[in-house]
Amino acid sequence: MNRNQIEGNWEQLKGKVQTRWGKLTGDDLDVIEGNRKQLAGRIQERYGIAEEAAEREIDEWLGRP
Image (cartoon, rainbow, N blue to C red; front, side):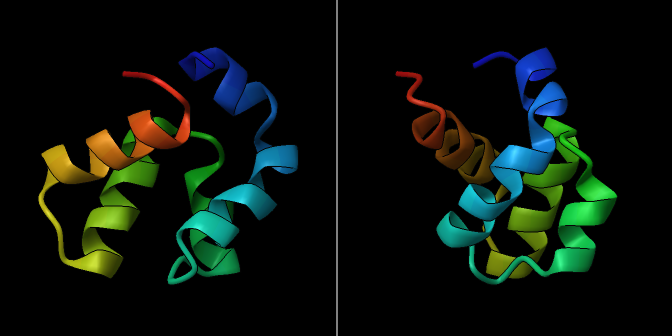
């Protein structure tokens, strides 16, 4: 799934994102609005991990090697 697909399907993906990263709030998801960089930043903030680790988690979640 590419960036445009994430943004275009954000309403459907919100539940899956919250299931995967339970520390993200509904307000976080509203702010993110499908923006991958925003998602990575919020994951980084909520879980206290490095940006690279957050990006890697997103890639794994999206099924990218």
